[in-house]
Image (cartoon, rainbow, N blue to C red; front, side):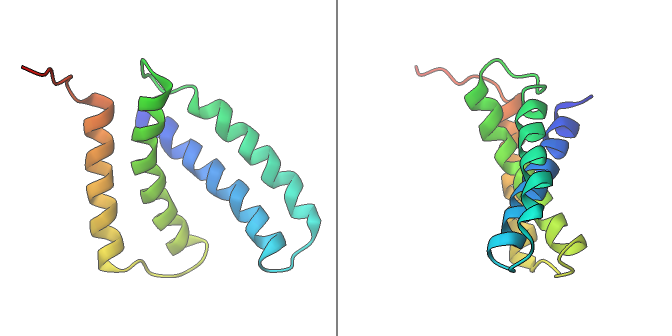
Length: 110
């Protein structure tokens, strides 16, 4: 699987896990929401380790861009709220940054 696919799956799992807590604490849903939420968060941590990166910090930094894009997709699909143009522009910038971080070249000081 490509790094973007692993990042996308990790983001989906993290958002679903956190959304379960949101449902319980913010929307007053049953505490039973925590079981699938915790399972999603555990799977998220495992999936994120599948990314091909030399350093964990670099993988996490690049993941941030994918997380933002996936969060906006979640907003549209699950919460049925249309992202604003500024959301989409910001997500594009973050995705570009994630690509540079993950696949960029090392810059050396002169």
